[in-house]
Each structure stands twice: as C-alpha cells, then as structure tokens.
Image (cartoon, rainbow, N blue to C red; front, top):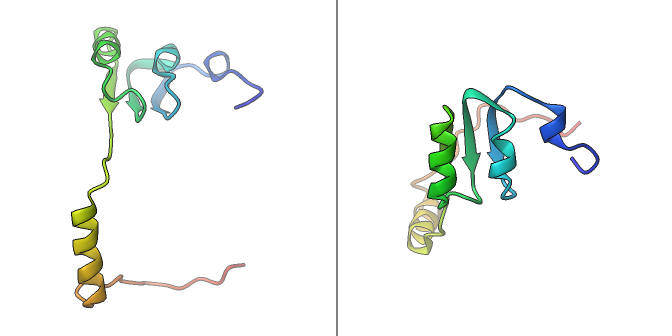
Length: 93
C-alpha cells in the first residue's frame, strides 16, 4: 500500500473499507452497486449523498466506548455468568 496507488491498481471493487479518510478516492474504484464502508468519514453526509447519487452505497460506522456496559459485562464474566464456548484448541505451530 506504500508503493502502489490502489486507485490505479484495481477497479470494479465490491467493497472498500476506508480507515484513512480516503473515501473520495475510494469512490473511483467501486463498481456500480459497490459499497464504501468508512470509519473515518462516517459523519460526512455530503460524501454519502455523492456516493449514493452515483449508484453506490455508503455505510459510515463509529463506535464510542461505553464504560458502564463494559463494567457490567466484566461483572458477569467475573460471576461466571458469561463463559466462552471452546470447540477446539489448536497448537501454535
């Protein structure tokens, strides 16, 4: 990714996951009906409208920490009420 410009290397991509505020550039590689998923420009309604006007889809996602919920989950884990279900254990090698 540091030596090749992806907008020159690929075309007709189904999905671009944008984690670097390059939503505008990603638009050029999406095929019609393709989707841009952005964690950086999730709030950019102008970009979303432009993408959708060009026959593509836009999904902006954002996650905010919710400390109260995390503490509640930790309490359930400590109490043994949440347990992982391990179906297999594999060796490192």
